[in-house]
Image 1 (cartoon, one colour):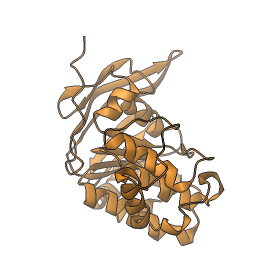
Image 2: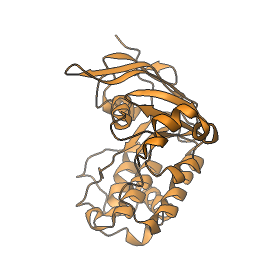
Image 3: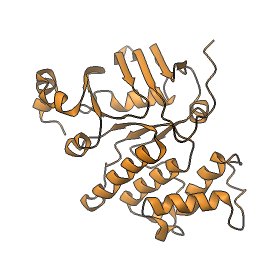
Length: 263
């Protein structure tokens, strides 16, 4: 029996994330092998690697969508390896995906308000939105202004641009009690004109909430200027975990990843 998942931490404290000896085999194929990673509380860490290296699979295991066949996932020292996705969310683990996970028919404001409502101890039901302003609405409006979407609060989430959807996902996370965030390719499909704003939103998420951020990103130039450390994945394993400068100078990384010309 696994250790009970801790209750949701405060929004101003990051959580330490550890994966130890993590492995995943599917149908006889090894997808992850002996993955060890120790993410310090409050740090901002990038994950890079060629397509098929196992980056999104690692996120799926950490967030509970996949169960590993070996190893452990620890959140602030508590074993959450077998915990459900909702239990991990209650413990403070939040995630975005390569494709948007928003409610497209709800307004921009309603998407954030729903997260704020749950964060403030209310119901997560879509049927219980108030007819007048309350604390959750005020919190949602504040976070929309923070990411530059206040003027689009009444638009349907499915109708805004891809870049704005990414900003909206950040606003949703800002409105929660999330202490550790997994960002899966937040710049994917985002126009060049939206990149700087989104980078600023990620910095705000990290600094304002003091949360731990782990992000997969193919835009190496953007990533290297944003993170504290970089983990490099290759064929399901971590081959380097160091500062951006040291990773770029690592001969193994240069031959195994950067030298391949992969995006």
